[in-house]
Image (cartoon, rainbow, N blue to C red):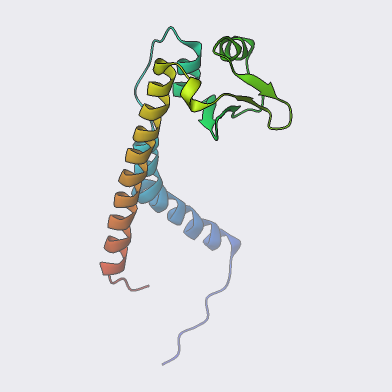
Length: 140
């Protein structure tokens, strides 16, 4: 017994693609965004710590970088007050980690720890989802 061929219609492709997107959102991406989302709100008097916690700047290789490529006047001024020097070549404020104030060091270390926890949580979730998907026997 032979089945009749199914006529290809673009609408069928869109229906299947939409179902896949909805499934991916509900089973994978929604939980990933929940894990990555930070619900903590900081009310900080330090402009540098606030910018670090908001994610507008980050510290790497003995330098502060801006995610947008430009530093606000407030942040630039505070970085210069603690002794950071702007490098046009690196487009960053350079300062050795040993010269950073304790409150800024604390903020950097706290953010690293939070990021590590999020990565571990994402890894565990995705590993669980992969295990669930490989255990399911589906017939199309």
